[in-house]
Length: 314
Length: 199
Ligand SMILES: [Zn+2]
Image (cartoon, rainbow over all chains, first blue to last red; front, side, top):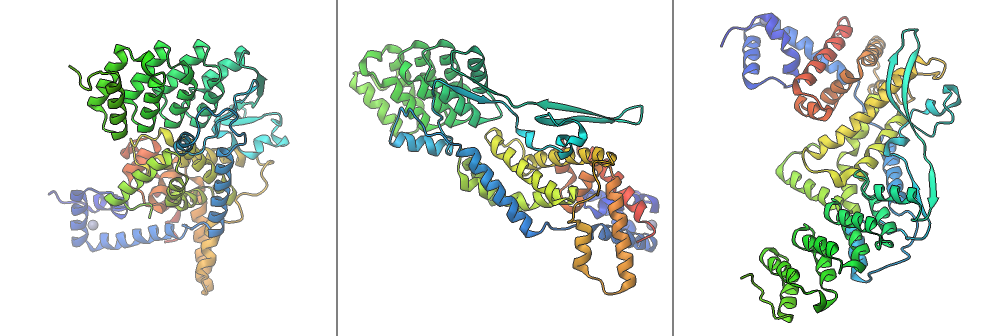
């Protein structure tokens, strides 16, 4: 271990103070401190400096914390329990409870003829007040976000502001703008609640191929179980369509959520024997091999037995 | 509580996050409560305005709530949360720098609840000479803190007041441990230089 000079040792004081030296580095500095009274004194002074920094630390008053918690609770409440009772419940009883438990109370919005969509973005509230004040000359701005600031050559300040206006569009699903925006919102990766509501609106129109595609896409790709479940609601009436059956079969075999697999098997077998083609039998036989949920295994076994198919793959 | 790293606590937190992802309100609230005090303290200390700290608190946890479903456990929840919080705070500090230069718009500087003054009251020094001294010291610290760049300020805050390791600070701020270390070095150098004749 090479000998450390005083200057070397002192250059490490701040890291020693913060405990950010490696074991070996710390050993070297401390070995030097043991042998050097000057540096020991210097390190004591250094500690006083850091202690002085500490006088600047403060806890926020408890009242502020309480206020913040209360405000957050009420804002979460209003985000989740937005109005609108579900006008067209397809399933009932345990299904609703299950949906509610799974989605944490996302409300399935009514799918009326009129679809309203509000476009905005999450960060919008976090705005400097002055941007919205008359003094700053952007009174008309709806939603702003400062993207960049810099000093311009003439001593002025240049501020690059993203403006996002909130606009309400109203129209039926036959309106291509509404339809396009809804299909887009149904895939918005940042907002499960928005996807959920969009799908609820689209569900009533799954007779259209583009909407059915969107529902299938959500069923197969959405990360939120509640959204996938909701997509199945719209596909229920089309469970006999080949592409829907394919998607449901895949869901039955690979969705991580057992509740969703249960719903998939329900939809796949709702028309009893008519749809018990060879492919379906194959799917159920494969399910017997990989499924570890007892209910689903029994269910699958019963169906296979009922149609005299083997419960094993030959 | 928030900084315990025992295995039990981690398992517990993972379970909480998963439950909250499935829409369990209680789980979400417990998650918030595990961290919200340090989030508020960070925002208060950085922004030194209760109003701004409150805004950051609300916006941060609303974003967490909206985006929790996409949290994939690639990093710790603490790191993920602090990424959101530090971004909001940095935005706000940068905006404020602009605001400060708009002299006509903002009449007074900081909010009423200045942490330095609050501490001064707590200590309530009786020795007048010492009181004068600590008053000057606080003003000086405040001055230096204000003159740090937003990033230096953030790293110093996270390391010195929140006690986070440089490695985690790097993860939070999307940079290397080395860069965070350099940033902290600059900050402490500036602080030390400014306090040289006081301490
Ligand atoms: Zn020495």
